[in-house]
Image (cartoon, rainbow, N blue to C red; front, top):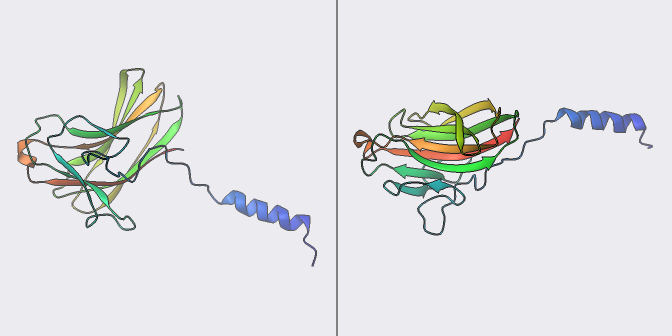
Length: 175
């Protein structure tokens, strides 16, 4: 049987309809811990007050583990943060998505900070955590930013002591 050009054209048209998955711009989206075990590789923390670990027992469906933050001490009014800085293209659409859960609702969230050089242009928060795993998503345009901070944030005041926040599967893609 001879394959016709019409067959090839139909196959190419079908392939063009299948969306390609964009590359995750984040390094270490698995949130694997560094050699010291106190932060995920390629991510930064600015406080060692709270306990950071991985948790194989508490992970969203389809994931082998999550990043666990146990609030063990009063961290004051500032939100705790685990972040990664990435260059972005100006005036470009992006999507940030992650899974999040906490022992009490509302104490964890994701955040994007749009930056130009060292100046903050805007803060964009996701929805806050709930007692069940949820996927939060934030679509944004980089505007005049040349880099972004992708931040996993959590409340750490005295009244959150003993609470836990879990993060998993952070993804930043160009739309």
